[in-house]
Image (cartoon, rainbow, N blue to C red; front, side):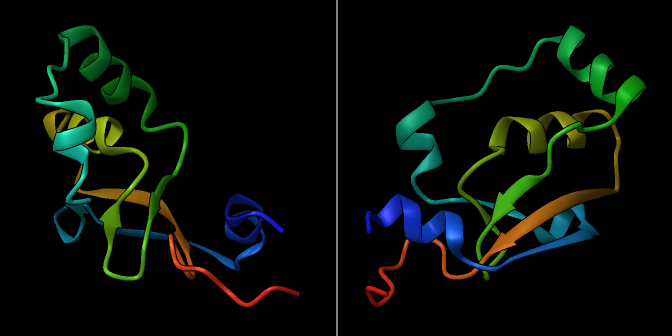
Amino acid sequence: MSTMQRRLRAPRYYEVVDIDRLKPHPHNATIYGAEKLNEEFIESIRKNGVQESLAVNNEYEIPSGHRRWLGAKAAGLTEIRVVRHEPWGKNTEEE
């Protein structure tokens, strides 16, 4: 079983959290560089909210959804829905 398959099969926990509890994954800046959000994206979040949950690990770091998180903060949201993956990015025993 591949690492990705193990990740997809890991338990998922959806929750709504305070937006300031989240932090960017350490590799986000390296991978994506400085994020520039346009006003249209921010206005869409103001009007419609964040449509897809952010993926977070157990430390509430965001490996997926960093741009949505920044847009939500810029739009003035105080809470955001996340899906917590356990474990995220760690190898599990082969089944």
